[in-house]
Amino acid sequence: MVSAFMLSRKRLATLALAPAVFFLIETACNRVPLTAPSGSSITLTSATSVLAVNGTASIVATVVENAGTPPQAGTHVFFTTTLGTIQPSDATTDSSGRATATLTATSSGTAQITATSGGSSTGSNPLRILVGTAAAQKVAVSATPATVPAAGGTSTISAIVFDVNGSVLVGVPVTFSTTAGTLSAGVATTDATGNAQSTLTTSVQATVTASVGVGTSTTTPPTTGTPTTGTTPTTPSATGQASGSVTVAIASAPTLVITPPSTSPTAGIPSNFTFAVTVPSTNGSAIKSLVVDWGDSSPLQNLGAVTGNAIVSHSFGSSGTYVVTGTVTDASGNSVAVSSVVFVQVAPPLSVSLTTSTNGVAPNANTTFTATVTGLGTQVAQTYHWDFDINGDKTTDDTSSNTTVHTYTTTGNKSTKVTVTTNTGATASAARTVTIQ
Image (cartoon, rainbow, N blue to C red; front, top):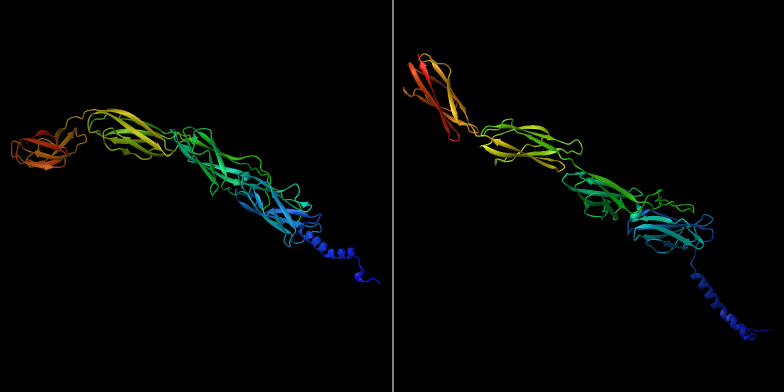
């Protein structure tokens, strides 16, 4: 009979080491990450296919075993990306077999994300997310105003950038170029509305092109949904260049012709001038104003939005040579000035002629007198002083009218006189003899 005390010392040492060996083996097993079993598939999805620079996107890896069931919770999935960073790079699945990581885009380009677990991976078709300018598909360009004056002007060029999903792209650089003139900015960044701007200054027709990144999409990527198979969603390719152009035209200037009176104007007497304004049929703009400077120190006269012929009357206060200038301005900012030299002749002297309705009337009959004034020019006859019988009873009258009626009570030759006084104080007289029979 062999007792426990009879066992060899070597056997006892072996039995004593067994628990420690089992502990080391168990610890080593626990340190090996749990990965997907052979034959599993991994599918990557994201809620977006486009990101702005420095933007983030949640990346979901769905692991499905060969039997169509999710793997054990805690299965490790390892993420990699060709652009930006993805954290955590090692994530574990939940009970539904989904592991989640966050992509942070740091520059423009196409981020290609892959996932692996054990011997399974997303394969040769990674999930692609377009970042910044790589997502650009369309650039809508406009100019305000679309035409500038012939003498030169400015136009604001706006470029709105759209991505492959039709949404505006924010924070991407847009490059502007022009066939003529100068641009205030060769590169501008889109704002919160996807709009980038530059100002064109030109005096000739110019075509401005706005370009941004790359991004002609062949297919529209899915943005939602949970795949049930191991195929990778189709994503857009980032090739070509998105750009747009707009042409800023030169507004044709209107024409103006001034036609003075056929005979030289007389000082103090109104004369008619014709101003003919023509709007060009090509690239013409509406007329805003026609302003006339008569050249005689009188105030400028604004005739308004004249199109066609405008006949305007004007009186020059004194004789001499004057330069009449008309300036026509259109809605595009074109301003055209045309001048015409006018000689104004000396006004005739102030004179009065006196006539009666009849001659040789009987006493106590009414006689009508009419005074006709010439050479007034811009003056106005204010008062008429009548002397009906200079050598007789010396009856007088003052009127503001050039016509009056008088009754003689005695026979004989009656010498009648009228004196006209103007608003400037000038006077002129005329006399006539009336016979009363």
